[in-house]
Amino acid sequence: MTLLVARQLQAGHERALCAPLDFELAPGETLGLRGPNGAGKTTLLRTLTGQIPPFAGSVTRRPGLRFAVQAQHPHRPRDLPLSARDYLALLGTPAEAPADIAALFSKRIDRLSGGQFQLLHLWALLSTPGDILALDEPTNNLDPQRIDRLLELLAQRRPGVAALVVSHDADFLERTGARVLTLEPS
Image 1 (cartoon, rainbow, N blue to C red):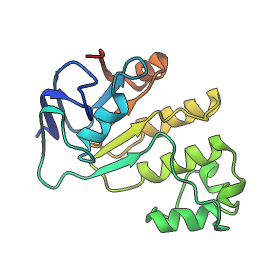
Image 2 (cartoon, one colour):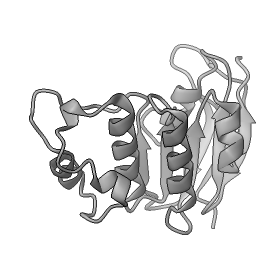
Image 3 (cartoon, helix red, strand yellow):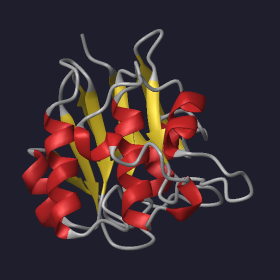
Image 4 (cartoon, helix red, strand yellow):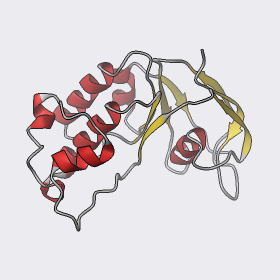
């Protein structure tokens, strides 16, 4: 069963940011969204997840569809001395984790590097019961080794979980095995 269908979809606020798009997303599929700055990649992702309405066209989502959304710059509470373990507990993430993630558990999140926090946050999303992972520039702050680790985690996601991935990094999108839509500014 298709998870979502876009027909003549355009995302935007005061004007359409991209040319009309037609596509479907199936369970387990990875769809990459690529394009120049200002083409509307993030706005399109927010439209697909229901955070903002379409500028034009339509998005049909399977009833009960659940998204696990990673913003381009995930919020990191800096005023609270939360450990990574506490942070994951607040997100409802299981206590078991791969060794590289578990090694961060005792550290305060305000003391993690940008790459460590990004990977921790992405692992938390991959552990949620969402049907679609919506990832906006997930390689931000990640060095090549952590990008490889992110690719491993994406490949190990639960069967049937789809992914929408916004990225400027064509090589990364290719390595995910994604079908790539290139957004053209309207």
